[in-house]
Length: 117
Image 1 (cartoon, one colour):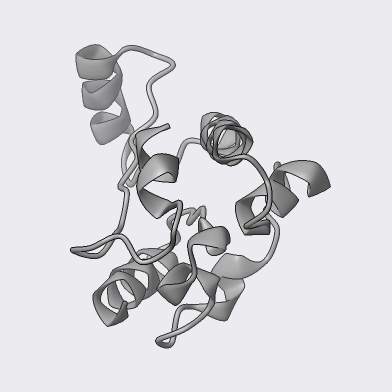
Image 2: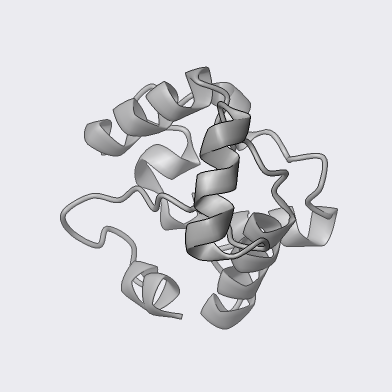
């Protein structure tokens, strides 16, 4: 809802990559002043992957795979070289830091399954 939208907007304005699971409805689908730019297909996501983030009729497993694949392709973004070095030493060179935004309740019929997939 509005909280998710506010968090996504703050992250997007700071230059974070946002991967919205638009099929779940609510903020991720563009409601509650969700940042419009965050719903535009990312350069490193295929049309099929982006479609799976939107398609409520697609299998939950396929949508979850598409989201995970997009996240793994996200270019690394860190604020300083020192911070990047610290994170790599703690998490490993190929690690991705992901913040999953969500409300306090599942809104869509398959939202819980999508999160758990």
